[in-house]
Image (tube, rainbow, N blue to C red; front, side, top):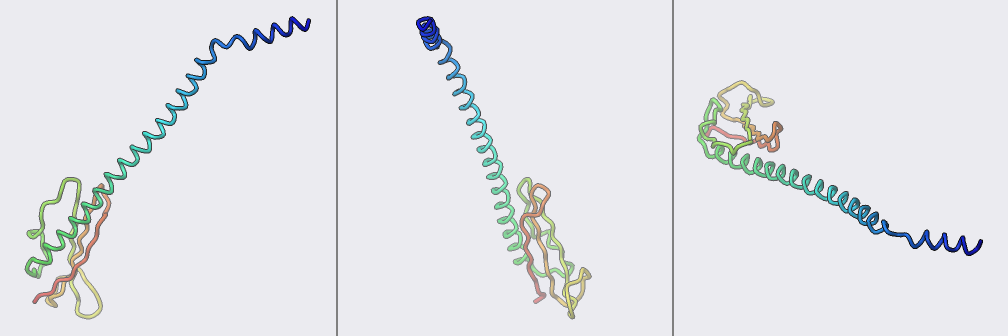
Length: 139
């Protein structure tokens, strides 16, 4: 009887014909899962990098546009669109002018006080990413 149990145990341990295949499948599945996670991280990094590039571009474009407005002659109507350059693809711009009312604040009504505040916003993908304000005086 002991001999019968011993031979059954020996047969049980001796028959490992499919173990290598199972180990290979498990390790391949784990490696595949790790690669999927890694590729997801790389794609997230690439998207974030592209967004950061557009935000940096919008900031530099806003500064360049503000420099052009600053160099342009004073316009009493506040329309500096002729001084602005064409924007790179994907960027948008809004320019607003308010006038100092001479007493307490800025108003949207044009006046003869000769002081303007120009607000420049540059956007990317539907949202403003760079805002600048500058003041021009009629001198």
